[in-house]
Image (tube, rainbow, N blue to C red; front, side, top):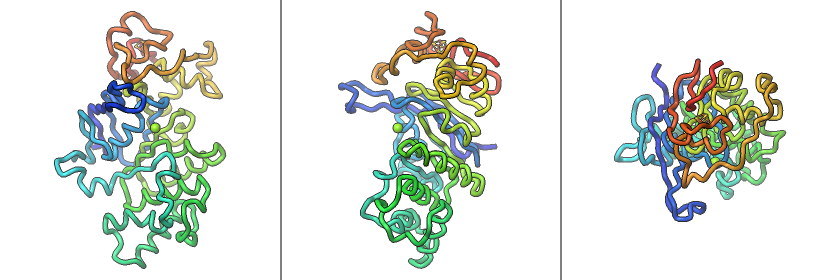
Length: 320
Ligand code: SF4
Ligand code: MG
């Protein structure tokens, strides 16, 4: 079936950023992906790997330098901007609910804003009813809609952000680290809410996290990003049970409970931080930290190729 969202050949470079020292930061450097109706695609990677830039392009908040995003086959980036009906159908949940919710607006006004922008409520009464419905969908009491964001806990504020994203009945929600700013104890509750909303509403999710463990139980497929590119992508079971890319193996072996099949070998420790995205290494971007690297890896960039039921960008990908 036709994917609901497709990204092809996405590139995005920033100039003069805080960390760039005058160089160009190659935030996203050639990403292709597909999202099917009703599925969750988890995207994982260390900070600075381009996850947030990718997220912003997938909802049309950022225009790629190269490449295209399509919604049900229709391009996002037309001369007149992203078409209104596409903006309505593709929503975003941000990392930090404290900075993404206007502190001077009531919860009612925050959740009602997309209803207003897209003219989805005929009058104030209908709008209040709809806001109440949306709040109960995310487990908040409609009685509190006249309160302000600071009167809620971090987890509740993220629920408000989710209610706002649901207001337009989207087909897709892109969530950029939606639980990273929350206490550990609250993270699981919010992840479970996403899983439940997906079951009941059938919305497709792109769920971005910096940790493979966070997306494990909500993702049908998982993509692992490294320095602006996908290192590995495939069905969650395949990626977790039989990782093909050394970077995925390292991420899994660093997890609190290493995969049984990785237990035999010594724990894989990644040397140092990821290299700067201003000057990514030539050849395979991971070769400066990879224990399997050969001369070829420093010269030839590996393409994402099929390995069993998933895809990996590695000259020496491991087959299950
Ligand atoms: Fe490591 Fe080479 Fe594979 Fe890159 S291509 S992940 S450096 S083995
Ligand atoms: Mg980010």
